Length: 280
Ligand SMILES: O=C(O)CCC(=O)C(=O)O
Ligand SMILES: [Fe+2]
Image 1 (cartoon, rainbow, N blue to C red):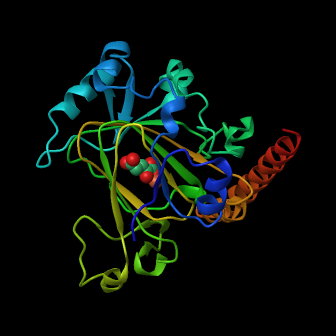
Image 2: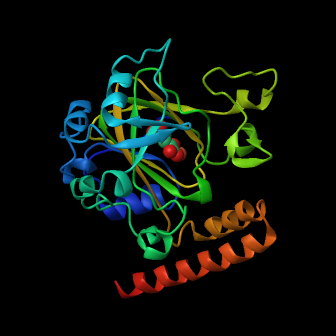
Image 3: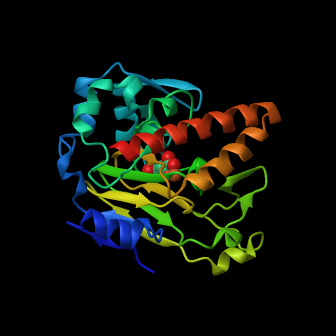
């Protein structure tokens, strides 16, 4: 199977052919509506925001140092990946360059509701920075069954996605069902024999391209060059049921009381979003 790439697809075509059936898509030019498209480069960030900091695996890094790290990154000695900035929190000025965030396709999105901006509900807009050889550490589906939208603004990343319905072949971890035990970059077929029947789809996403990953789709990524991408997730009536189920599963691992509280909160937040949508 191959990834489908489309330019100038209409919103209705996207909904019918990709969103509803849950088939990934690369939009080749949806990002043309963002000022960030063609503007974002390692030097642009280095010059404009040299002192901005983010944490990566317990270490704080400055933008200027990150850009040096990815410049010297190699397959043999890759820079840490991914290095992520929460854009609204650490680079708020950048948000106006990502307008409209939904690219006219990623809608509706209940995560825009202020109730989801409190706490870690997946409502973040994130900047991903990488260097050659940077591997996303695991094969996964996004938490809470959210849909993922990843726009490549600089450099090239190789993605791997699996068609829906192969969960059983991909060995989800018993203690973390959104994460796989497999190392897809060097699969151990002896230990994970069912993986032989899985059908990974590999493809490269380049500057100006946007990858839509439907909820529940297993995926991972590999940075081929220096890369800068913007990622966000969406929630609406289509993935709401799975979202609520995940909120329960995830929170009940902490405590039943917490699960009840958080489930109640999520339910209220989704009702409020649904109501707002019906008046939009
Ligand atoms: O661009 C990447 O490295 C993949 C990011 C991703 O899948 C995620 O953050 O959930
Ligand atoms: Fe993901």
